[in-house]
Image 1 (cartoon, rainbow, N blue to C red):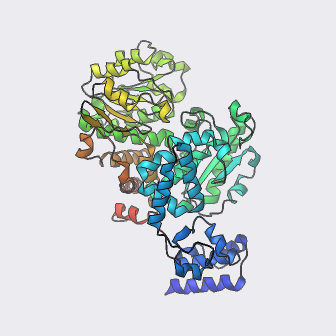
Image 2: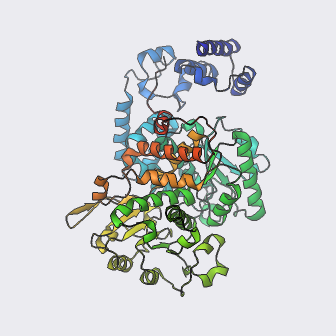
Image 3: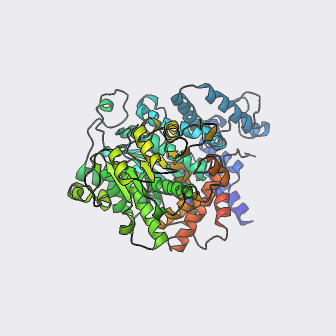
Length: 597
């Protein structure tokens, strides 16, 4: 009864004042203590409110992607909301609209054209976009994210049509809080932010890196069920060192070399504290595609004061660890029984190595320093060893073991004889025929993970891994590869895609109201993902479950992450729900059209 009274009171208040702009409406909400009052309104009331704010025009409603249903508005809705005559007479269901849109997208042969069609849909009909993505996730994930998003970022200036996030440049220094307030949503729970310096394996794309936060947050909603209105993509523009972009007439960012040092640090510090001041303690800030020298420093600096997560370091580590835990069913033994060799010692490589060592320590109770001894890393100068320690960056030093100098991956493979080979180099074709054949020569079942993105940068292809190992390798990659048949057996490559982890991880953090990210939560996410691989999957050589079940997977990951947050005393949403999986599924955003009557 109270909610109906509040609804009536609110609508009478709005109608009586005939508010004409958002600032007056927000002021009225404060005066009447109606924070979050839209939750109490029926869809019809919300619709009518939008009408009031747009001068009573149904035409404006069709231009709002949050509420637009295209030809799915019913006859009664068209009469009730001033839409009569503004649409063709036919009424199409959401299902038929979805079928039509998929037919259209499949007609495009160029991946970038498919990407642009999907982004265009997101900008005009939000619910249809997410319905399409959820129902066709395996087909459309490579379109809206890796690998196509890489090309989209490279050409972002040329294809830019509509701003989908916030751009905070050096011009906004000193007024970042004011800039954040320009974003129309007052409640934000997840921010994905990049400075564009290391976009996938493509390098410095500056301001055009915005495609990454936009894509990541689309997956937060589609795969993790986080409401799109609670997601905010941000690009920090401090310039670019990419000469091609600086000379490109269509480039959309600052035309200057990258700011570094104190100027860079001050801007990031202002940004971090403005976010906290504007959105509170529990907004999850996900760092994305920062260069190594900034990524580790930012995570270390703000992890004790903010709710921060670096997907390149922590998300990649969690999804790879899940694959390793799952692969043990095929390899045998425990993690401690295996020897790991990494090609690449940047954010991804060292992040994965750290989480592996941490999980081994959880299992055997030995110090993490001891469990690092079977984990070896190769960088551009060769095997990371003790004699190089003085010249190494800090994040590489824990992996400097005693050994004679070795240059070249093939020589490291011959000397270390790893059971598991992991590529995070960002350089394609590094797992040569000789490397794979050597791995197969001393391993009955070698595990080969070519994780660099996009596809062109993968260390080897699925076909190469299976052929050169005579069908004995277990293979996973960062970008998708098609199933491959070898001597009558079909192998389904695993995709160590961060999309398995970060949407469910973020949902779990939000559910629990966690105030910090803890390594225990990452381990919980990895184990939750690994537990969902079945015998049927193993028979096909898969070490990850199919993405078709991703929302169920995300709900289970969210439940385990939230449970760990409660266990660690980091949760603020009390009391803890009895069934966290059910709770996760219930709070997921649904893209199904609503009735506006």
